[in-house]
Image 1 (cartoon, one colour):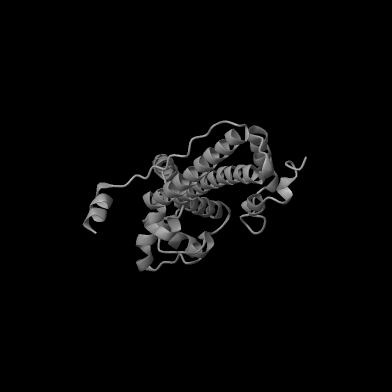
Image 2 (cartoon, rainbow, N blue to C red):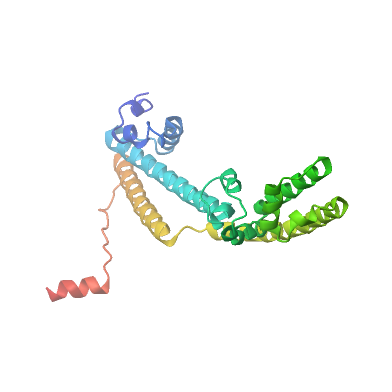
Length: 261
C-alpha cells in the first residue's frame, strides 16, 4: 500500500506534471503511467522507487517532445495554407477594409486586377456582378458600382449600362467568364495547398536538431535508470552482479587533443 501511495511523496513525480497555466498537463495520465511502471518493475525501497519515478518522468518527457513535434508541424501546416490574398493586394486589413478602399483611382487598378487571381477575390467580384445585375433589373445602378466593375474587370461599364438589354446580356456573359476562371483558380489553389501541406510535415531543420538532441538525451537518461534499477533488483534477489562497465566514446580529434597536452 505504501508503494501505491508514493505519488503523494515522490520527489520526482511531484514536479513532473505542469499543473498551472496554458501548458497545464493531465495529472491523471501521469499517475496512470507511473502506476503501470510500478506494477511492471515492482520496486522495493526508496532507491528503486525513485528509479521507477525517473523512468516515468523520462517517458513523460518523451510524450512532451512528441506533442511539441505535432504542435510545430500543425503550426507549419496552418501557416502553409493560410489564405492571405488580401495581403498580396497590399492590404493588411480585413476584406471589408479592402472593399471600402475600392475607388476609381487609377493607381489602384493593378491591385484590383489581382482580385481575379484568387478564388476569394473572384468570389467578391462575382458578388459585385450579381449586385450590379440586381440593381439593373430593379432600378438604376449606382455610378460607384459601375466604376468598381470597370476597375476590376476592365471595360466601360458605365457606357454599357445605357442599353439595358445589352447590358444584362453582357453581365451574364461576364458572370460565366468569372465562374470558369474561379473553377480553374480553385483547382490550382487546391494543388498548391496540398503541396505546401506535404512540405510542412517535416520539421524545420533547426527545430528538428533541437528535438533530436532532447530526445537522445532523454533516452540515455531512461536507459541508465532502467539499468540501475535492474541491477539493484538483481542484487536484492541475491544474484552476483558484476560491476557496471563504463564505456566512454571519444572522437579521434579528442584523442589527438589529449595526446598534445
